[in-house]
Image 1: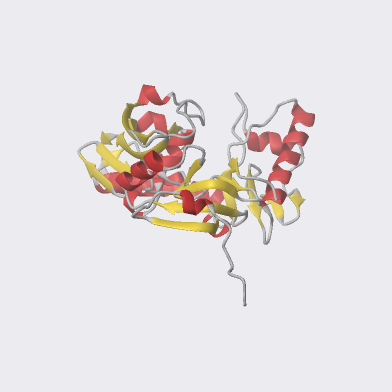
Image 2 (image 1 turned 90 degrees about the vertical axis):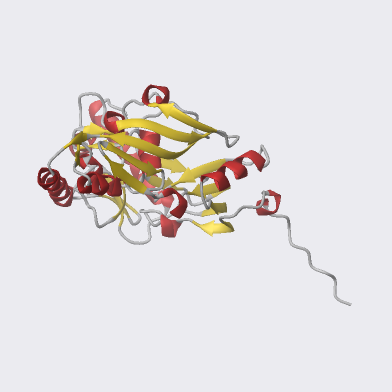
Length: 306
C-alpha cells in the first residue's frame, strides 16, 4: 500500500483570495531589465486598486510586501525575494490628459505620460520621455533627467498604506528630494497627477526628439542594464568619478561597466545578480580610493544572495 504524499505548506496558502493573478515561486529575471536574479516567493498582479487594498488589509501581518513596476532600476539578488512581490499591471496603466493636467496610474510608463501630454499640448513634461520606468518607481525615487525631476511637475499622489488604506497626498507630504521619497517603504503608490503648461505641440515634439537623440547617443539604451547605477554626489557627476578611477569597461563575470556611459552597468550575457552587484561595489571602492568620495547606489537592490 502506497503512502499518501503531502505538499509542504507554501506562503501562498496563507494569503487571501484575490481577483488578480497570484503565482508561487515566480522567476523575476525575465521581467527585469538586467535579466538577472532569483524568484519571488509569491508574485501578485492585482486586478485594480481595490484588489490590492483588500489584499493588504487581509494578508497576515508578518508577510513582507515589495512592489515593482517594469524593474528598470532594480537588481533582484540571486536568492530571490521572500514574501510577496506586487507587480502593478493593466489595472494601473491608464493615462488621461486635459487642460494642463495629466492623471496616471502608477503602472503607466513615464514615456506614456510625456506622449499623452504632447497629444494634449501640455508642455513641461517632455523630460519624462527620457526617464525609463513607471510612475510608481519614479515617485518612489523622485526620478529625473535632463534638468527636471518628478517633484517639479507633480501635483498630487495616491498611495495605499501597509494596511490598504488610501491616501491622497500633496507634494510636500511626500518629502521628495534628490532621488529620495520620505514615505514609509511599505506604502505603495497607485496613481499620480501631473501639471504642466499649455504649449505648442510642435515645440513639445521637437524637445522630446532632442531628448531621445541624446539618450541614444550617450547611453546603452539597447543593452541589458538598470539605468544610472549611482546617484551624482553634490557638485560632481558619478560617471566622471568612475572614469577618473579607471573603471570604464571594467568587468566581473558577464557584468561590465558600459564603454558608452560609465555610470551604467550592463549584463553582456549570463551575468548573475552577484556579478552585477559585485562589480558595482568594486567601482565604489575604486572611486573612493581615487577621489575620497563614496558613491551611493541609485539602482535599488532587493532580495537575498544565492
